[in-house]
Amino acid sequence: MGFDTSDDACVYKITDEIAAIHTVDFFTPVVDDPYQFGQVAAANALSDVYAMGGKPAIAMNLLCVPNCLSKETIRMILKGGHDKAVEAGCTIAGGHTIQDPEPKYGLCVTGYVHPDKVLKNVGAKPGDLLVLTKPIGTGVITTAAKADMVEPEDYQAVLKCMAELNSYAAEIILKYPDIHACTDITGFGLLGHAYEMAAGSNATLKLFSKKIPLLHGAKELASMGLIPAGAYRNMDYVRPHLELLPSAEETLVDLISDPQTSGGLLVSLPAEDAKKLLKDLTVLSLPCAIIGEVLEKQETDLIIE
Ligand code: CO
Ligand code: CO
Image (cartoon, rainbow, N blue to C red; front, side):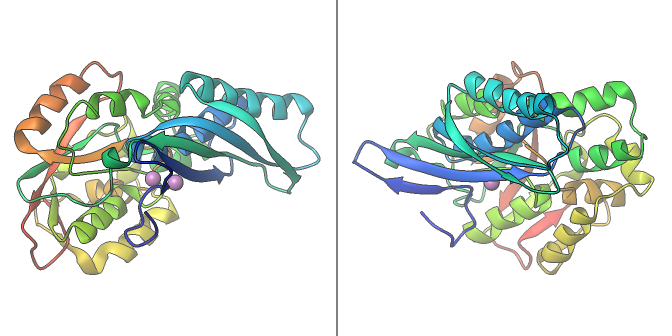
């Protein structure tokens, strides 16, 4: 599987039983604490393997550090990544470090999946419902946190959300044999990833903006105009393919465009299964919801109500 539908990772069939999944992700710190940064970066990098229906097996560190960073800080970044990988049952088997004025960290991950059980980001069918497994708003909150505008408990909640592995949701989702499409929500925001799912599935996705779970504090901050630049880029990209119904509140549309770090899984599956899945997902510590439906192809790929 390759580039044609912007899927989450590369999948390479090795035998009739095993396909390898390859993905790489690294970025600049989204949080101040080095240990938490390591955890979030690793959870984010591992996520694409889960989005393909696979399990991570082995990973390599990618680390860029300025001269001024202490050995202890570097150790804590790597420990954060290591601890997340251990939680995921994935071995970190080395890596590479270079000097760089701005720190960056992430993982190159290899996972595996049965070739017949690969989940793709396309294949959504009319009649499906869309399930999202994490709340959104990480971009808005981490941006506001840089200006010290986030309540401490809201900040702890966003950290917990970004560091949460998608493995727990994926394990439950994989019990359903008829998953039509699956992707994880990252930099393109719910908007961009839903658009790609719609366009690649030759269907229209309708998002129920009021049903989308939000991180606490995100709506208030967004309504104050604390929207990261990436949200506008996402909206500019998708706007020609989007119909906004009058019921769609502007602040919620901004949050739907908000670039996510280590966001949840977006899954398209038959309506009856989606309702059962949602019940099963209540065991998770983060709120999940049915946030939209799949329609026959309309004039636009995406509708927000
Ligand atoms: Co992805
Ligand atoms: Co990725």
